[in-house]
Image (cartoon, rainbow, N blue to C red):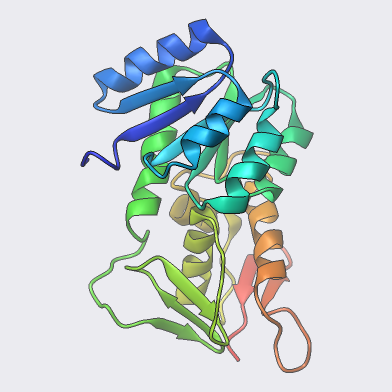
Length: 233
């Protein structure tokens, strides 16, 4: 990792937990900045100095969801949410607001580090082989995986890192259903967990961002018991 890609911003008001995570991450080669409230976290995140932000939902002054909303309004940096066990609503809302993934607390430093590495691998490079620099074109969708850029009918799509990866997986398999487990493994960097709603929420967001086909249908279709399919039109 270079100097930029190793910088982690950890936003959580639990000082003892943050200290434990920071110590472990630094031993793993990361440079860690810690802040303990949402306002300070937002200010740090928007400096553009960090590769990823780790954001707790429950914080004083400004909670994690509002912090996420403000960061995402101005930045596409990867964001990993820390949520309490059983807080399904917070997880779904966080994903809808643009979080890339979440980890349920309590979690071990090793688990958190593995999730950070998975997100950074996806952010810094395509989940697919990037041997060719030619754009990936499916109908009115054009993607440049090496540049992490995508357009629909010439208009730039504002995608999170996870949305970009999921869309690329679908585009490379356009016209064929892709299972949620495949999407999770190739787009999130991990197997699909039981009752995991991540894929569904991210794909719902993508539907709203992508244009429609000539007949008015969404270009992103659910295939019953098989997964999702990007229509080749």
